[in-house]
Length: 93
Picture 1 (cartoon, helix red, strand yellow):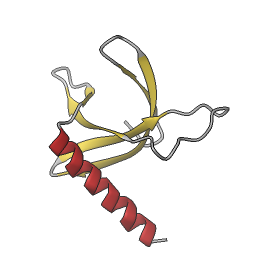
Picture 2 (cartoon, one colour):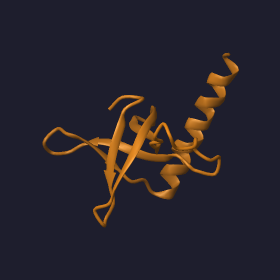
Picture 3 (cartoon, one colour):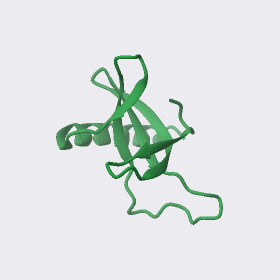
């Protein structure tokens, strides 16, 4: 998985949703993907209230990369780390 890649996620009801990978980061030895809903060129930009989706990257038994939902506490930890990373990158400019 790479930043800028668009991936398709499927929910419990088999509905497909496209998400753009906007960042990848490692927190406490685990890798995470930061995703936002993919926007078509003719659609409006994301609204401020839309949140990023954070999923943990793992490997399945066949060695394929899979995305795993997070518990609330883990989500908060990764969201804080990502916010800090964004603030650090913003201060470098």
